[in-house]
Length: 401
Ligand SMILES: *Cc1c(COP(=O)(O)O)cnc(C)c1O
Image (cartoon, rainbow, N blue to C red; front, side):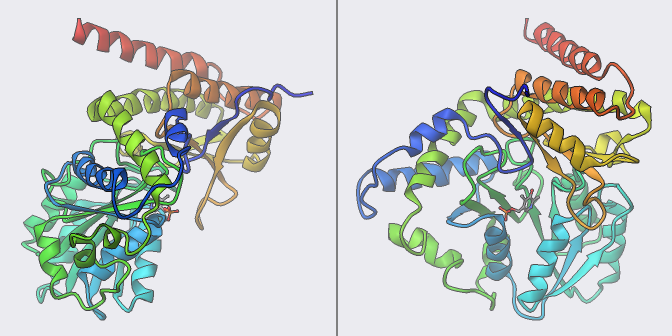
């Protein structure tokens, strides 16, 4: 006997829960790809993506996952042999850098401080040492979904500017867009990329790139350009070429709905919602951590992301904990990933279409599992979570009163 009948909660850091509104919008007959409503859908999605990235630059939609957008960013701006500087802060920037290597770029990794965000001073020092301007692009993630860190993108921009370096700043916002503030133009980001299946609440299968004038200028002389990813082809007047072939119609219907939902809620309200739910999660984890078994992966509180919390499990089996949550209680949490955290951590996602009952329910199940499996933990995690959320909402009400 279990207590898992009822709605299952998928609490992994991507794909995230797809809202019923998005699912319904996708339940739609196929339409003409040369005329009619689809053309309008493409144009409004491209325009609204600019609002989400907060940019006046160009946006592109690919029928691809996030790895496709990585490839698009590199091939559109760079040439074989160019050096790119990869800012390690967990797993994902490094994998992006590996892709750069396969493409024939010279990917240098700026190593991270253990369990910390990228150090802007280290970036500035490395760029100052690059007196011949060999580094053509700096690659970083805003949130690393493996480590749970959030990098300070404006500080990284300042580091590049202080060094007087003209490398492009490319930022992977796959796990942060619509979850934490991101201001492409105000922060001086040249290329930003995102995927459909995280904060944007659409099934996996679409990814997005935004590029400013500086990046599009570099594009003019880039030699790695390939037909499928090519921005110039996609900027042409013909709708068919915007996708280099048949448009991923149903994904676009879903995207249209999710963009409507985000704009109805307000982007700032959406990121604030994530901050409150992440705060409740961190309050519970901090409390549980007093038992000695559970520990935040990221050492500095200010560097912990609002879309995923990575928790190290010392002296207990994370797989058993996750299995219990899933098989007995119907909550699917994330496994630890990457060389450092595989088999040693769990990841609690609070990303995308999530509200208070979903997060409090997830945390409640985790605490239930800690009790049932007799894993050492500090008592009162749920009380700490509700106290955190209650106080934050009370303050919110006072501010809007
Ligand atoms: C999920 C994720 C990716 C990979 O996206 P895919 O769609 O699986 O290719 C890349 N970067 C970050 C930060 C992510 O969270």
